[in-house]
Image (cartoon, rainbow, N blue to C red; front, top):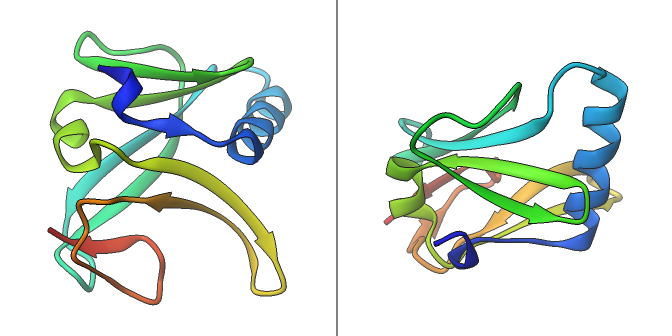
Length: 109
């Protein structure tokens, strides 16, 4: 089911850098939580290892862990890393989101 969520090359490169700098954690965990300005929000954390219900999305040496409940809201999404004049951030291009917020981490379905 991990083919439903993809990881861009720029996101994979940044995740690999973050994990290497940490030295202990092995992956980036992305989850969906209730709340935020539009109803749901994405949460990003470093993780040691996958949990039993995690889906692992890989690109090169980079790994992203997504729990099965969050995957329901993220199906078909691309996780990207953007570095532009406005700053650096992970962004999720979610085809299921019908509304989003200027903060970039909140969305509605």
